[in-house]
Length: 266
Image (tube, rainbow, N blue to C red; front, side, top):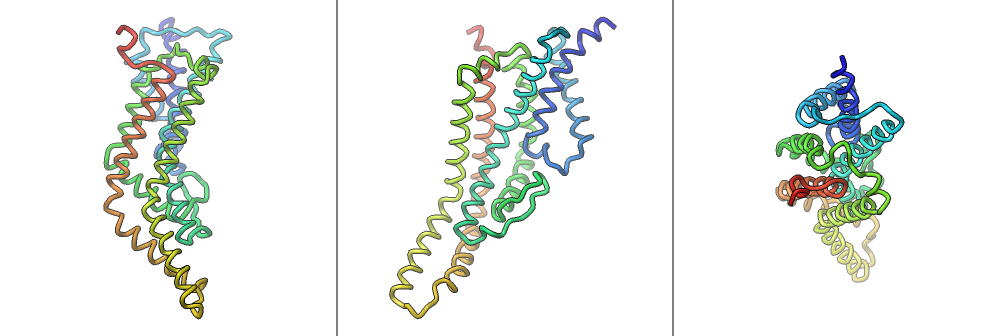
């Protein structure tokens, strides 16, 4: 009983970090995934993590234990947000394309998040999720949360990093990287549609009898869909780079909050 009372506080802290990670992590946080499955998976992973990393750690039920819980929840939420941020870049790229093609007002309901998302963004996001599963991206997510205790143990310095601005700087860089990636994914079609607009402008000057507002919209839709079809084979390479960047960003977050395993003794 004494061993159980000593192990339960540590297990609860690990359970808080893992559960909060599953709340916002891509794919697992989907509203289509039952809540019982999320809680059961978090409990099982927390038990495995405790048996691997927590048997030699202690935590006391005192006034500071609430702060430890808040700290672990923040780490899980931030790690999941960093992973999700890279995939949100796909929807941002789709929103940019929708504005250029003319689908800006054609939005769809996303059952995974419960929000209204761009049409092209949702299409690309579903392809990204399928490729994410085929490339064992869910294994990367589990590796990130399980081995985060090698980088960021329970006695971490999260509040110190928040105070000195290291986390703020990291999240600004991560958000900038996501936006750059979104513009890079949308750039080929956006440039092509811009040249289409230039061509329609010359047509309006040389042949004023054509109603550009009538023929311009279907032309841009046709050009945009054709280019999207032509660029479909390259999406696997783009998303592979995206998933690698997601893993590097999660590793960068863990390195900001904690330290690389083995670097302390070197």
